[in-house]
Image (tube, rainbow, N blue to C red; front, side):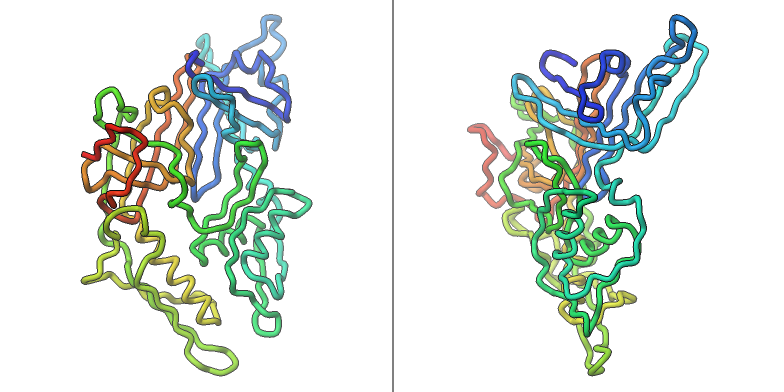
Length: 378
C-alpha cells in the first residue's frame, strides 16, 4: 500500500508469506451491522516457472475454514484488527492471457463457526440475553460476551424457549424480536466478541465526515434520502393459553431518537399502522417488546451513502458505531449510525471506504460537536 496506509494479513495466526502478499490484487472487506462481515481476497496465479502446477493455488494455503486476520492503519497509527474471518469459498479463473488467471478467496466472520450445526435444544427458565451469553461463551467458540439484559425470562412451567436451527440463526431471531443487534467481531485489542444488545448510536462519535468544506473535506461523494412511509405504529394481540385473557402489545413512539437530531422521523400526525400476527408469543410483555422493535427499525428512515477519502479522514471507519456528518445542510447534517462500510484495498496501494449510514431523527440539536472550529453544518 502507499506510505500513508498499510496493512498486514495473517493466515492461521502466522504472517502471510511473501508469495501471497506479492500476489494480492485487491482485498475487499464488508463491515456490516445486520449481516455477517465478509472478506474477499483476489490473488494472481500463474503456471510455475518449472511448469509443475500453479502459484499460490497449489500451495494449499487457503483450505476450508482457514483463519485470516486483516489489520490496517492510516499514517503513523499502529495496525488495528479490521476483520477476523474463515475461508468458506475459493473461486479460480484460468485464462490463457498472461496475468489473466486469478483466485478469489472468500472468508466470513466468526459467525460461520456458529452456523455449522443445526440443533433442537430447549432453554428453560432463561431470558433471551441469558441464552446469548451462554452460546457466545460456549467452549466451541469462547467469545467474550457483550450482552445487555432483556429482562423477560421464559419459565419452564409456562413456556419453554426452544431452539431449532444453528446457534447464530437462533440468536439472530431472539435479537430481532427484542430490537437488538447480534454480531461477532474482533475489537481493537484482538479479542473476538459476541454482541447482543440494542444499537448504540449515542456513544462517542468515531469521527466526522465532512462534505464540501474546502480543505477540511474528507468525503468524495455523499447522497442522502428520507423514507417517510415506514410503519410508526405497531399493534398486536394474543391470548393467554391458561386464562384466556387477551394479551395486547402496542407501540407508537420510537426509542433511540434522543441526541440524533432535532426532530424524530416518526410523525405524530397521520401515522402508518401495521398489525402484527403469527408471532407465536404468549406474554403481553414479549409482544410489546416486539412491537417496539418494529417501530424502532422503521424510525431509522434517513439513509445516506458515500465514499470516504481514507487519507483525508485519517482513520478506519467502522460499522456499528456513530459518526458525525457536516456540510450537507441543516436537514441532513448531524449524528448518524454506520450500518455498512466496504473497504477496498488495491494492489497499487489505494484504499477506499464506501459507507452506508442511517439516523432516526432529522435536523440539528445545536449541541453537535464536529471536533473543529470551522465545523459548518451547511
